[in-house]
Length: 196
Image 1 (cartoon, rainbow, N blue to C red):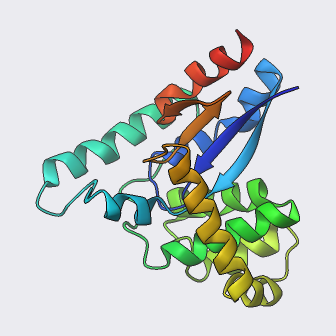
Image 2 (tube, rainbow, N blue to C red):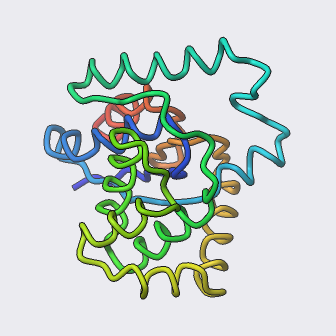
């Protein structure tokens, strides 16, 4: 089965659309996704890029409406505006890095995004963290201890450095044979490329 690298940061609003679609895309096209969490916030700060500053309310309003429209077009819901930006961005992503190492990353990310966009519970904060981890049969106390530890922090930094080395500047991003596709609206392009 052909594999696509899926680079994402929990906290990216448009990533919700991809996270909610990947299972169906895998089934439909017989491809697989390698889930790769990283800190898009760190990269964007280094680029001096603020995606939705408070001074650009029209752009923020458009983003929420666009996500809602596109989610409905895909066949699912998005209750917007969801809490944004995340207060515990890094913790949410450190948990995803630990999940990547232990094999439950995709389940955790789907669960935490579902709570964020349908229940308005922020990833990285309670009760989202505990509820999402318990839903996928992970012990919140164990996970939080490991996720906040030095080893996971180093792995998170390595993931972010790896994303930068691949030319990634936003989330979600997809990589196929060294080709970068940025944005949920490029998911199908990435699939077409891997199947060419």
